[in-house]
Image: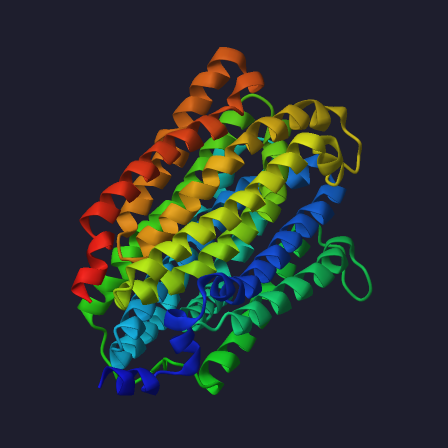
Length: 463
């Protein structure tokens, strides 16, 4: 009977429990990695064009970066909860419950948009006036923030569709959506910022509009792929009532994931505030670092997206061996990527900064070179933290990921940054990043050992 039920599952779901793990991770991850790299490239190109306007323009966009991170946190965090629930239900062969998880997740994306719509309307000016007293930075930051928040509907719906598709093991279609949006954004950036062709010169406003147009097209393609294609789950738009238990299951993983990623936004906000009180050039440097490090972290997040449904499926199927093999191989790949990134940041910081220093400002190099070399030390321990977070999310223990992120990016980094800034200004403040990452590694190692002994090693017994 079990073989009969198994044969009824779509072939691309069968591979989650049968294909060799190394090959499966590659097949599941490379579209996400490519998509993430494209997104990282877009972030760099976007900041590159903004930096051509001037250092103050780059600072204005950097001040709003935490708000963008918060939007992505809410969208991705909800998607992680939906992804985890769908994967576990498919692994347990509960197909109708998987459909309801997908349907709830899609509807929740509209409520997420309403939240940021209100933030954009009412909080744009207070946020910018809190962060800076430079008129140019304040006014351009307000406009940029309002545009990206009020139009965040496209981003929220797009991310919902992508996470639903990824949960079924389909990583190619989400890549297509991300690729389209990023390419359109990159093409429109210089045209809208500098007024090329039929477009007027709009500066920072043009950068925001280009971002929104790219997100809108990604969303449109995502809807076609989600509703016109054949998938393991079906999203129902009408004819059903929300089930509190499904929403609770989604946010049992999704809420910690949102909070975990939102912590990064709070950290960025706090670091901008600390650095801005010392030197606003340091804020621009932190913005440059954020764009550059995405080339290293985004592939690791792509691995994370690839292994999450694999681990969730095999956890639901009570297959301990495949679950742990996926974690171990995912960590090895992530560590290699991070080690390569560390070498690049240590050897070529001046060249990396030059990408965003069109005016050849010496202060950018004076502050940025030691900053990049110091912060990049955190890359190696971060690999373990990211992969540990993925296994906690996959098996439904999202709060364990949350506590680790709190240690790494809030309880650790901001107090350390504040103390070190008071001791020695910018000379020591950058060390808060690697020190906080080491604290997080200790926590994740202890938490993973606890979960393995209490739960994971007993999976085969329960099969």
